[in-house]
Image (cartoon, rainbow, N blue to C red; front, side, top):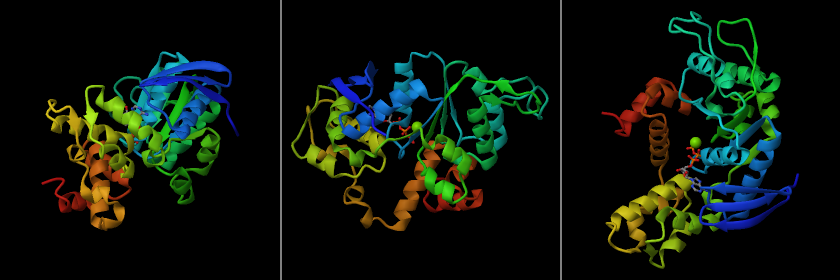
Length: 321
Ligand SMILES: Nc1ncnc2c1ncn2[C@@H]1O[C@H](COP(=O)(O)OP(=O)(O)OP(=O)(O)O)[C@@H](O)[C@H]1O
Ligand SMILES: [Mg+2]
């Protein structure tokens, strides 16, 4: 399927586009590459027409940021965000669908749940690839029939939320491994928006560099070519952090930022074939552990390994004492 869109203005972080004949304005999003512009255009179209959208892309590609852009363009006020990878199945169920008072030990009061609380606004469900099959089945029902059944209740309630899903996992791969329900996958397949990794959109690197550094700084000539050679496993988040580091390293006094100030390690820079399997594993474990706010249960779920395995890896890589 194709989409008709035209960029009217694209300066700094203000993007004006005409998408399918309608003018839209997006602030706070830097996008110069055709693939990112197309992803934004599709986001605008789907958010106006579909009840559910799925934002897919590696960690740090900007899924949450695109969600904020969708919200901006839509003018809908309400938005509730839930990280589905950071909770146990029971807690998540009650968080999303609500519960009746007394339906389980901690249910001291009734709870409406995120679907109902979102009202006519958005419900942003992050890390849906981490949901259990049972949670996925309930999610499918909520999307398909626009109704939810609170834990401990026999009565289904209608909801009006627009659901934005996000994942950094490959849902096709998860589905073929039986870890993501196919029925749910087929329901959202048509409304998937892929955010390309930063290494596949070099046009955005320079624009993001300018955006994150501000107008005060100048860069020496080797900086941009080196940034373009880097493969950005952490995507835009990694670039943002590298720019922050460079600014600090320049002690806010030097106006000229040189490549070494970015602190991008030679090992990462020389690309992954120089890394050992242990290096890669350490990176993955450390990244998940940080994202799960150092919670061992959430991290073990996010990585799909038992707690004991995670524990020994955290010890091995000195991530805990
Ligand atoms: N195109 C962009 N323009 C400006 N800032 C961006 C852009 N893309 C990402 N960022 C910034 O990079 C950081 C990471 O983006 P974001 O949190 O949206 O990534 P994500 O895809 O949700 O990552 P994760 O899968 O780890 O949750 C944020 O600080 C965000 O504001
Ligand atoms: Mg995110």
